[in-house]
Image 1: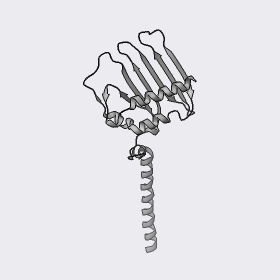
Image 2 (image 1 turned 90 degrees about the vertical axis):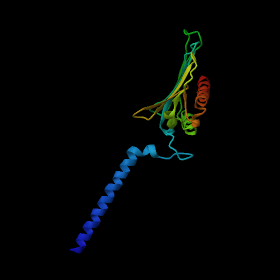
Image 3 (image 1 turned 180 degrees about the horizontal axis):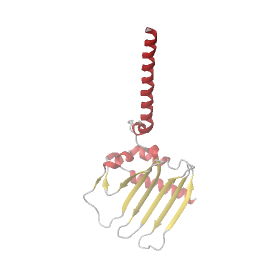
Image 4 (image 1 turned 135 degrees about the vertical axis):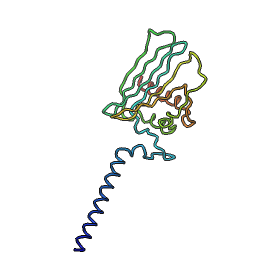
Length: 183
């Protein structure tokens, strides 16, 4: 009789342990991604979620407009789009579009990791002083496959110091991609 009771208690304890472990596993499956440490300083910089980005700069007195966009396709290739409208001549818009190989987003992911811009963009504060008739520049990051999250950075905002150089680094990478695409 005592052996049956002991086996029953052990069975209940093991069953409770399995249920707790299953609950913890489900918690990590659904919510764990945001808590995974992934790099120097062990901060999740979210660059692994990057599925596309768009840089646009335009407006101002002369009306010049430049847009670069990368969008990851289902087969992991990347669609590259480029538009340019020269200043004061709005009738001629130069457009290019091509498919680039897998791994094209990797340099942008590295920029996101180094600057932590995907997690620090939310801490941006709008500048009090703005230049009138100056062009506006935005970078929009697309994160996720099924549910797309959009993180946007504006040049009219001040961001944490770790984000310094994001705009220039991304433009430089886009210009290199454009040169590659033209060849």
